[in-house]
View 1 (spheres, one colour):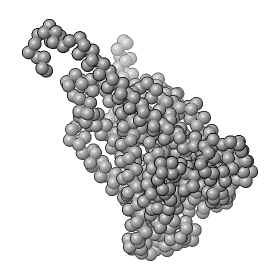
View 2 (cartoon, one colour):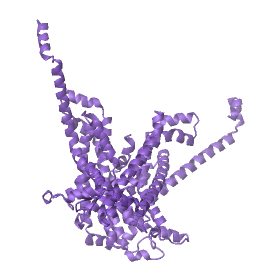
View 3 (cartoon, one colour):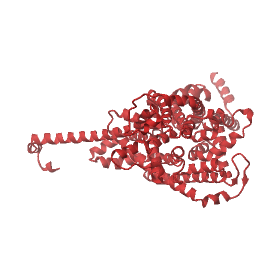
View 4 (cartoon, chains in turn orange, cyan):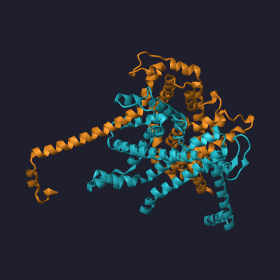
Length: 306
Length: 316
């Protein structure tokens, strides 16, 4: 601004070469400092995020009383694996893991099937009441689980024995969890982005609605299906309230309910509890690292589908 | 010759108006029927396991009885009972404090981290993955981890306090600290999700807009306030609504960390409902509180839409 009155030659003459390089260096320094601060902040939060899990590794390989030693030992001097033995022998840990797997996988598979069908209908088919029904689905997004669990529990526990789907059964756990409103919403949004012409062309060629869905739409939906699949699976994998209510026997508990019950069983035995935590987290982190791209996309889906 | 045949054929193919309408109606009917077949597999469980239980809960809030014995109509008794229940007002207060603290904290941190990750792309993938890890743990496990971290004798926080020469704290034995621990545990778990969410939202903002502003001489903070924030508004609305719905239902960490204690100072709405329902067998009151929770969520969602959506409508 101050240079405005001067010609280009005059301005460059006024600003000596030394001054110029000093300014440039200062600029560079500021930028470097900003970058350093930014990465420092990111690193601190990365450590905060991962740190507690790493922190748990140490007590899981130690006898519990060693935790009280002072000054604290961060690295176990003996490698004690008894905590893992206790978990495997004295609890139904593996059974809980299997239950979780069956529960979360089944809910995911059923959800994907019915949500893609409904999503397709809401995005591409015409029928009376379409807007109204979709609004109904969306409005149930706001219903808290706490409102539903007791009526669901009553329903499930009154099912006659011959259905084999009462309390403490897989169907009784799985089926009430399959109707997530978010899934239908996500699928509808995704299908709406697919080119309509594709569907029209197939229809003109004489394809039935089912053929259009099965042969044209479904193959294009693979990314959305993976994202909703991970989303649903993760949601059920951490689900606590419903399994807590609907399972009463030890061998039907899911991991979340089982882990919570460890607290009562091994009150102060933090070696055992951290061993359980390590056993729970290691497989999930491995799966996460393999499919990281999809996991990250799953949590961004909400933002991208606006 | 040829033209005569065509005309005859045309006559045969042409439908009278009534016929045409009937065929059209038949086609539409068949089309709707097929569409209903597509939505039926979803709507059957949706009605049975979502819509009916929701209305049933409302009805049961006017009844009394255990979970498994038959319900008896008692009018407004449950509502009267909970309206003068200090435990419920306490739980609502705790939940409100928790929700406000948790959302403000997690959104601020997530927005800062997202802005940094958006600006400094080198190595950002590593940070994204690291921030995501707590999300893989069930809230129950997160509760246990934080119980371990806050342990008086060997928890990291107390060891650190000891290390810098401060007095150790009985963190979960103190109401204020206990609630704060629940806030921090949930923020810790949710930070990765919201960071990625805001990052995705930021990357949706067209680069040209920011470049144009830069050329026009807008400084960093100005660009953020005048371009980034207004464009983030719809994303923010969705985020606020989702966060309110999710956070008002906080339960798992309470169950593991404090069981509502000490002295009900960390009792939240869902904890209150769960306790009345399955521990005290006061199911009618539990239903009334559950319906109240639903109403609170509905009202807050409406307010969020009104506050964050209003500007958008005016601009459009």
